[in-house]
Length: 239
Image 1 (tube, one colour):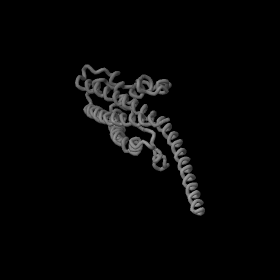
Image 2 (image 1 turned 60 degrees about the vertical axis):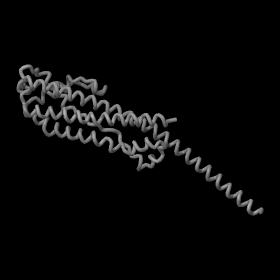
Image 3 (image 1 turned 90 degrees about the horizontal axis):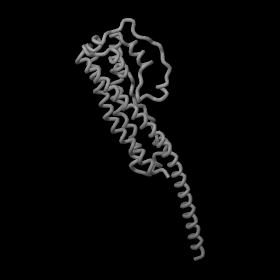
Image 4 (image 1 turned 120 degrees about the vertical axis):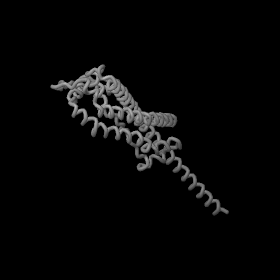
């Protein structure tokens, strides 16, 4: 009987020790989880700010494209300086380049106790693919078709001069608004507003600008809601 009591005491002691170890491990995991959540809150906040900026850029591209198409429909009323300003906006690259996460490889994903949040974080990389694919398609159009056509037309110097010295927009970063002006100057042989607005190739490319950037913004609105949900869940889990 005495021996059985000793065995029970040893077993109880082992169980208590295991319970203490488990509690300590759980406490450490929760501390790491809180640190991960704080970092995620900062990173997703940055992603949201960048995404909002890209949405505004695409809206400016769409607005400028509609102006150019209006000039195409009424060449006699087209204003050359306004066309140069609008085309310069079409050359702005609105590519969304968010902070990426690889919580699975570090093992930190298992520490996230909120199931919905864990699921959203797991799907983050695939969620941004839809936006980036459309952006890449438009970027290819700009580099392979729009820019060469503008070069051929002879207004690239005017576009560069406007972009470097006159472009102001509410979607620019504060640092960009303070950039130093560069005296590129206007083209030696200015192309008329009529020549610009009557280009059928540009008319097609400008129409594509509306299609691609509108599609990218539709995807971005969905992504923005996803980020806002992630941030809301993170805030609820931070103690």
